[in-house]
Length: 313
Ligand SMILES: NC(=O)C1=CN([C@@H]2O[C@H](COP(=O)(O)OP(=O)(O)OC[C@H]3O[C@@H](n4cnc5c(N)ncnc54)[C@H](OP(=O)(O)O)[C@@H]3O)[C@@H](O)[C@H]2O)C=CC1
Ligand SMILES: C[C@H]1O[C@H](OP(=O)(O)OP(=O)(O)OC[C@H]2O[C@@H](n3cnc4c(=O)[nH]c(N)nc43)[C@H](O)[C@@H]2O)[C@@H](O)[C@@H](O)C1=O
Image 1: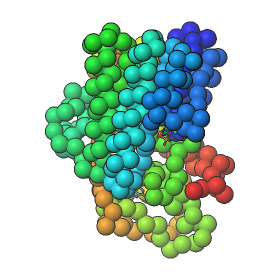
Image 2 (image 1 turned 90 degrees about the vertical axis):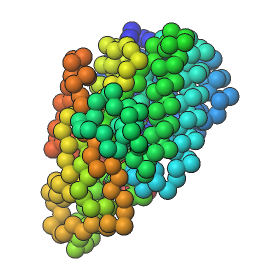
Image 3 (image 1 turned 90 degrees about the horizontal axis):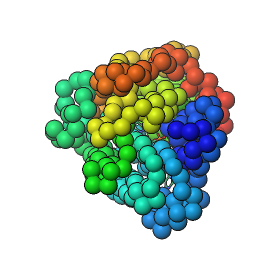
Image 4 (image 1 turned 60 degrees about the vertical axis):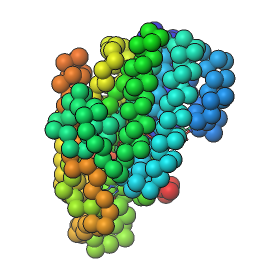
């Protein structure tokens, strides 16, 4: 991409979009385009068509989506399938109609079958049943992948799809009902320390395993793929190592400095038992994650302390 190429970052205030924006700015890209959801509701086809016709971006990072943790996905399945299908359909189709040069679509590793062998290889897509807690969201993401692939086949476009593992970092969602596990635990352990609470309650049994990638690493990978990858096959983005949720809780407890106990609310769902991605493909293309979980947890906690302390919703 030229440094003055017109690049639209959809979802620039979110965890992923804000990291992509920071990365592009730090790499010297000067012609960046972004809108909040209030300014441009990507679920509205008319607004999206008008925006693309007026602005004519050359490259699109599609990081706008309806996103949430296990309970939010489970409780609001209609919102997750509807908003994501609308956002991605409108953006991908408007990109085609306005001849954009290249688009990167962000999926998620929940597109893989619940019981797929580990680590998850890209070609396990559509080989088995999905995890029920996030099936509607995953089906929307699979539709996005297939839409990119179909436009490439029929129209000769260059739309690529990346599948990141669970993410965390700056501008994460710290709302305890709708967030993912890592930001939820940073907040829970911090608040328990501040109030001298005897214990922190974690959801589920603590036995599921997850892999965590810092958002700055993800942004680096997205730019790398935009500049170095073309093709219909999806590409996993991860670190290649996972950890049990209980162990993650212990690590966060230590980072925050909480000295009480951990309890488990087993009425809450565990979700998929394991979700470790195979990163052979992106590694062999020449990209590797560089931020360890220990470094990332420190960075994320410092960011939380500085930016969210009196401002959590
Ligand atoms: N977080 C994670 O662990 C993972 C995320 N991903 C994927 O990465 C992508 C980004 O996720 P993440 O950054 O975590 O999500 P966030 O919830 O942090 O951010 C989502 C962004 O999407 C924008 N958005 C939502 N609805 C609309 C709408 N109707 N119109 C316009 N913009 C909208 C929001 O804009 P505004 O702020 O202006 O309202 C927000 O900035 C998603 O595709 C997600 O599936 C994949 C794997 C894991
Ligand atoms: C990125 C990914 O994210 C989601 O899938 P998930 O990985 O299951 O999500 P999660 O981060 O919410 O939970 C991971 C594990 O952690 C446990 N857990 C403990 N204590 C808390 C807790 O306090 N909050 C949360 N949220 N989980 C907790 C929780 O019970 C589960 O076992 C989907 O949106 C999916 O669509 C998707 O793509």
